[in-house]
Structure formats: structure tokens, C-alpha cells
Length: 352
Length: 110
Image (cartoon, rainbow over all chains, first blue to last red):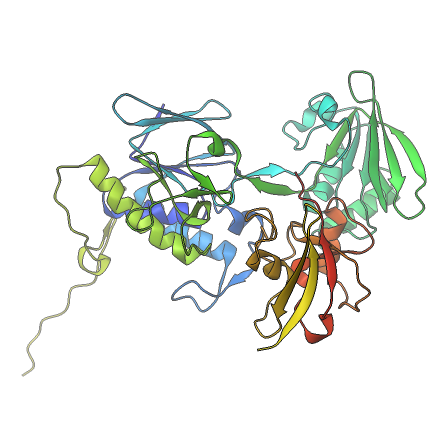
């Protein structure tokens, strides 16, 4: 069981900054995120896009902002459970919470702060009638163990980096690799596109464009798929063991929606007149995941909400302790790792 | 202040006639959100970067729209329910020549 003071669900900019504000109050944080890396949308969707409305930064790339935040919170040694989705929450008799992920990892904390943005990122599934029947019976949306494709016939669909990269990778492992995409053009790193071209010329990747998968067949497990050329509408049947659609990820509020929290407009209602607490005492919601009158889904607003949440969390954890907020210019930053940053002392020297 | 008139069919098939300003740097996705013609969280998920297809719509009138950018073209190639008249609402900026534009919102992905 992982124990911490504030359990933060979502490692986007708001969740990361909460670690800093909590650290100033000597509170430890642990973050859970469904994505394999911190940063949320900033890292997953638009790392190379510039952001212009972070106070004090005339321009900063989303990916850079995350790198900076990770650097800023490093002294407070946050823990991470990445690649796992927060699934259930249990309130214990003493008012603390246990949050369990889809992989069974348990986290125990007196305060839970949901900074889940638009939700956890789930694979986008193609619209095919009997898709569900073949899930885990030949259809998978991500590649966990490449070895399971050794000597198999694999069909990958998609036009982005992951479709290209996995086609290249599996070309060496699988017996046959077919890559299906609705256009002739791929959207990926130039290097990957050229590699696929090369492997296609060598006959190691069977490229089918502009086409899409139109049907799945097989008694119990997937045996073949129908691929339709979107221009000529001509249909081809391809014998396959595995079909891996890689159409990117889309955010879903997911299991959090069933935690008994008040939901409005796909977001969690909070008390914005005070501390961004939800209808369940001890559970807060900050950043894009919450809603209140006048809500704006801006990173800078998430930072503010995270700061107020931490003050309230402190009072919840230490109801009897007296505390007043201290400026970092005055108190400096003392990390849990023993590091200390503070303003250099002024030099006092008389002038003759 | 200058407004144009748009006809927008929502995902339930209901027709809405709305006024859209051309001087607020707005795009069609934002117009739809400002009138709440689709629930929050189901449209404009990426914020308007042509990186999701939650604002996909079908253009029903014969207005001359600006060419699709590479980003829009690529996103539409990965979207679902795509038709020949599909566009991403976030890439259609409100200009005077779009007066009378008629569009239908594509279904949500799930």
C-alpha cells in the first residue's frame, strides 16, 4: 500500500503544481496517471505547441512547461503510479481514503485531489459491428508484449506515429505485417515514414492505402478482416491473427464518474467560493476536471485552484495546527531531499 | 459588431438558427459551444488545435470554404463517421461570406 498525504489523480500541469504547493506545507504527494508519462494533455497531445498565457512566460512549449514543473517539484519527491487508471475509492472509518487502480495498486491518503483534466486517455476504437467479440481474441488497442506477435499475421490500422513505429518494429517479429490507412499520406516523423517505405519496397510490410477495415470475421477468434479501398470501394479479404487499430487516444471521465461525486457538464462540481472541495469531504477537484459558475479551463486557473486546495488539505490533515502562508521569497524552498533554496542574504557593508 | 446567420443541426437532429459574430475571432466549434448546442466535454476537446475530431460537422450548404490544412486533413482521415462534406468546426472561422452557412454536427464518437 502506497501511503501519502495528498493523493493526486492526474499528473497534468495542475496536478504537478499541486505537489509544489503541498511541499511548501510539508505535505507529501503521490500522483496516479493513466498515461505512461507525466504531463497529461501537454505531453500527450500537444508537447510542441506554444502556450502564451502562462503568467511570466511570454511563450513556452507545452512540453517545456511540463519539464519545468517536474524540475520545480523535484525537491518534494513526489511518487508516481503511471500507466494505471484510478478505478475505485473507498472511504475508511477514520475518514481517509484508499484508491485502487485498474492494476490493483492501492494508495492510502487522508486527502484525494482529482486533477484528471478531461479524464483518462482511452484508445479510440473503430466503429465495427462485432468489434467487442474479438477484443482479446485477436483485437488489441495497444501492444503490451511484442513477442506474442512472433510468427503471426498482424494487421495494423492508423496513420500516425504509433501505427508507423509498431509496423516497423513488428516487421522483424511477425510473419506478416499489413498496414492499413485511409489516406496515402501518413502523419508521423519523416524518418518513420521513410522506413515504412523501405520495408514496403522490401516486401516486409504490406501497405494498403487508401483503405480501411470494414469487417471482422472468425468463429471464436479473429481469422480474417475485410479491407475496403475508400476510393474504388473494392473489398479485399486478408487472413490475420491480430488486428491492432491505433487511432490515438481520447479522454473519458471513466470510473471517477461513479464515485458519487456531483457531476455537471462532464465535470465535477466544486465549492469555488472556498477550497475546490467536492460534495464528498476530503475529495477535491482541481483544474479542467472541475466546474463552477464562471469556470475557465486554463492551466493558470488550475494552478490557483491547486494552491487553495493545498491550504484546505493542510487544515484537514492538521486541524489543530496554527499556520499562516509564507512567501517563498521569505521562507525559501526546503525540499524533502534536504535541498534548500533561499534568497541570497543582502550584504551589509558600510561605505567610507 | 457584425453578425452572420448560421443554421446548425445538432446531434439530436434539431435545427438551430443562430447569430455568429465575425469580429470575435471565433470558429464554428466555438459558436456551437457558446450556444451549448452540444454538451460540454463532447465538443472541442482539444481546444481547437485540429487534434481531435469532436467538432466534426457536415457542410450542407454550398458555401466556398477555405481549403483544409494538412492538420485538418490528417485528423479527418483518422476520424469516424467521415463523409465527403466533413470538416472540423474549429478550423472554420466566422467570416462575412459564411452568412447562411448550414451544417450538421457529426455524431459523438461514443
